[in-house]
Length: 624
Image 1 (cartoon, rainbow, N blue to C red):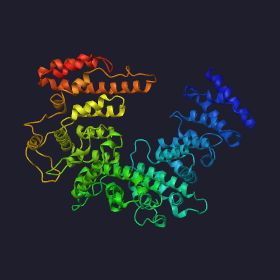
Image 2 (image 1 turned 90 degrees about the horizontal axis):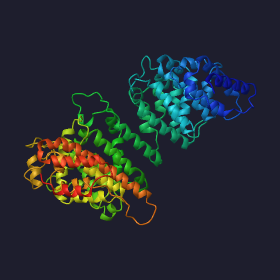
Image 3 (image 1 turned 90 degrees about the vertical axis):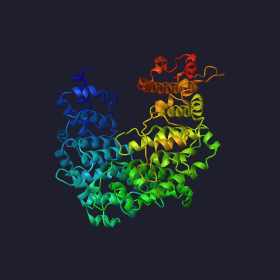
Image 4 (image 1 turned 180 degrees about the horizontal axis):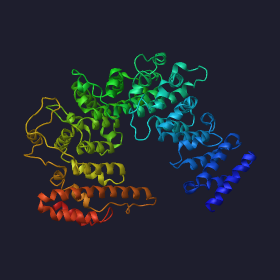
């Protein structure tokens, strides 16, 4: 149907419904106005249809979804501005649209409001509609439909942080119209507290306790996105004091006073996850005095959590599991471990500045990993939360010292376990972000950890290859391949020639590492260690061998195993590509390896399933 004819037919149909609201909507006709039509339609026709749709909604006696969908399509082009939304006749009743019991109408009203986020003057117009902003906040916190609540969240966020802005960049200053409305309007600011506070449960027009916890979760999520001075500081002290906040603002209320974490385990989980995400946000430096200890007050997030006891409370479920309720521990141990891992990863210097706590964590990991039986590892029952913490620790803390052992030594390569293998791969690979302040130390420690581990696991590479060849256990096989790739592409650094630090976590010297490993010297790079014994006689032949298949299995129904075999073959080929790329750099100093490089290159060219069974055997006997 030609565009013009289609537009005329739609307009005529909408007029019929306006004249007789009991008539059925022609859904197929309305759906035919697709994106191509809405991009090419004359603006006068667009406005005419929108005017009819606006007049239709208040009297419509059937499901409004076809109408709201058409409105959404018509206003979707970015050139359709908020000024044009305001010109729709009859005027859009934003308040009624937000309060309507229909999610479809709610979503369309939000779509119309969102048009304001592109211009500060339009944001000011929305912020000036006090009742509309109040209804928008209520919809965000109280909507039963999660899609509606999510879209309301996005609209508020867009009005607070217009495009090209960053969190905290405008605040309560000229131009921050929506900030002022939310945080300085007594009714709206107070409504956020009253809706989310459990102290108002049972009062008139207040949500149920269950619905309040939903609102609490939504507020925590929003605070992660708008963190900055406006929510960190007091705005209306009288309102804040009513809800237990004596010195602070919305952040203090939500993070400290809002949640009944002792009696609501699910909200306690939510709160712990909030602390973790808050801690992992981009550090925002706080003002420091000449006497400030940088390792204890490097960012606002960490200082805030520490100052209010939230840091220690978040760690306690990992440190002191024996003191906790077993039911609580089921939900909170992993979250506590995740918080700890985030702290170690985001603030490694702060973490290393507290050696007593570091040693306590190492001892805790030793205890947790030592009691895992061989059968548990073999059955895939790995202590995942403890492995996560281990992987997040600065690598220099994992180095064995004197007679003390490293918890990394209790992470086995045999029996093969997916989580254990991926942990080893991550630790051995080093830090991929070379811009980090401690990247050099991390990469030197990664190399040392690999050789310390190898010194106690002479069959390491044979066990890794054995796991990779067990294609029926796809995830474990792919984890074993990740170990190979991690060492091949390792980001390793050099150890110092002499001791340069008195820190309990100082790196060993090169000579000390070599002596402990019983070798005069050790390869400096991952590719170099792969191209020497014991790896070269095991890893390279395996990677060059043709991929395994399940064609010799008896019986039918091989779809899943064949799929597993192919996925492992692709991962194996990807690892071979890494080997080939690293060999091309390494072979410049080893011209005798040109033949091997050519052989690896030919196997790469054959793809995941190609190759000759003779190639792997030849590689194993080549001499460099």
